[in-house]
Length: 122
Image (cartoon, rainbow, N blue to C red):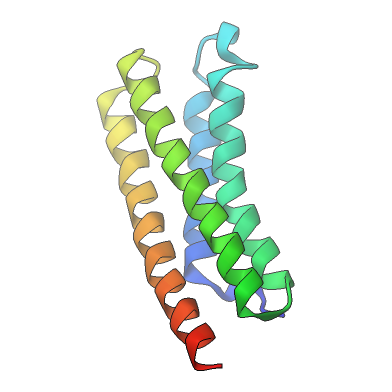
């Protein structure tokens, strides 16, 4: 069992989720149960899957949960584009969120490779 709080990628994903909550506050009320909810759930899912994977036994399960986090990150990537194109997000907000998301995706990719190589050794 690993402490997810010790992982920089979890910390960055947590900050991403906080940022998504902040920017979606200004979305139209009609989107509360639509895009607002979906973006919030996706951003929380990234950090949550990292945390859950840390609580599982073995690298195989950790790897699986990291893959799910990566899937949620890809989903959020599209939702950010959609929110920008619907003019719910200013371009500057989009770029700021996308920049953090891209960093999380890169960190996840690196951690996935590390965990996969450790799995191959054992």
